[in-house]
Length: 156
Image (cartoon, rainbow, N blue to C red):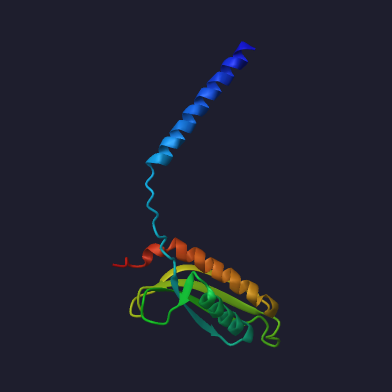
């Protein structure tokens, strides 16, 4: 019984010390909020293919990037992420069934410099799954943009 009371006393003492340290830390923190810099990654979508499903995928991607708060479509000669999409019909005789696609993410400092490979993905998509795949590609683009944000030159 005595051990329980002693243990309870120690717990109470340590909890009071913790509350005092927390209060001291809260008082010593400056009250100067900083503006959070907006993360807006420039992106360019390039499409190469002969099938309608791949074309719909590229168009849907451009629409999603254009309406997103994380990206803006950039056609000028500035540093940007390039999303290259290539597609072909899964079956030549039945192109409406599905498309084989590849997506490659590159970084381009300018149009005159060598592009840097960042990531890639390949797969097969049906006409019904174009919107879901486009959303997945936009999400992966955001992941790539966060991972390689250091490639962009510092703004002065």
